[in-house]
Image (cartoon, rainbow over all chains, first blue to last red; front, side):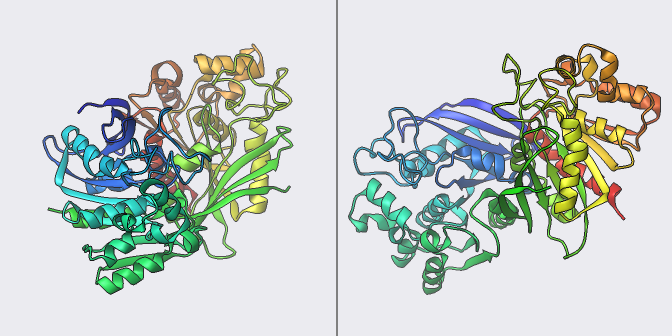
Length: 281
Length: 281
């Protein structure tokens, strides 16, 4: 598998790169970013995957996430994929909505026409891109973890619950935890997976936990001034499910914080510290 | 003087705001950002002014500068103005160049038609905006300092040299130090101030020092992989002038770093620490 380098910039002693490749999973070119901290030649580093939210590309967290200082100090590689396939031939939503289609892949493999051909973000982020990254960057595949924001928090938690041995840590900023029960999720899962809600459970954090998925614990930050908290995020549903299933959940409700990268960047180093502790050795 | 709030977001415990006001200096609406860290009610804080480079607005450093963590820890207010007047009635450059006109005010009060009416960024950043900020934010006007990037580094150094008692510290990332001697500067100063080079010396760091301006010292970082280093920035001219004038200069040549915010963000906390030490008490 090959890729092109779009840009590289030295930052905090390491290299922030942006890369493009032809994805087999999505049938499109895909762009992703990788930060590699300064490290001794020949060593392999743990890698943190970051899944972004609605409307985002790799660029939002890469420019605004303020993760490089902590990654440099903790010796973590940081990978940020795009949130959907893109291109003139990729079907979007007929209404050009921000919450479905382009920029809103929801980290599923779509089964419904016309989306099934390209919208295969589950396979992309859990299979194709990890292989590409492992082949081309100094990554230790045995030390991976995953985090995300909003729709990407949904992605990170579902990916971790279904691959608990591959991802040693999982955390989220303002995640969608029960897409089957909230407007953003119902719209997306209906569109990509069809109306049968049984087919949604593998892509719903709360449903996965109800169905018996286990994990070593989650760190979740939500802002109490987040406009989406009550209608779309509903962290109380995750809290109830984790309590019932005995999954340790560190849920922090941050007073005054909203849904933006001003919130994410504030707590990014806490999350990376959490990941680093679980990626040691 | 009144202004409108465009947005506020909690970040690192403080508030990142963006504001708009009708500027008398430029005859246009102007947008600026202010970060105010968490602080005890009734206290006044030192303020760091950040002047941006070519093509930038307030937004570049606000989103990519990674200054909030250090400002929160050090108790510094951080203000970022725009780099030029903007609007449908503001003359730009006939060639729509990135280095003259909109986004490229060069922190001078233009004397040449058609720019003299709006391009009054010197008055804006040294007089009008400081008054507006002092009236509306918890700023201690006796504890101000200034920094900038590229064209904004030029702005910061010239403002400091001409107002050494008002700005207790001055630093720059990749500054244009001798605009009279480099293509960007010659183009801009000719366009805004006319062809008589005698009128440029007040807006040229090296010339100001040659003409006797004094300052307590500068911190300057430049990236050795900066594409503009040799033709436009020429830090060696600043070094020679400071040596001759006995102005302490901490000039750091950072191997591998370029002209981008990936460079700036890496060293932002060093600069804010430098400012904080000089703004104490």
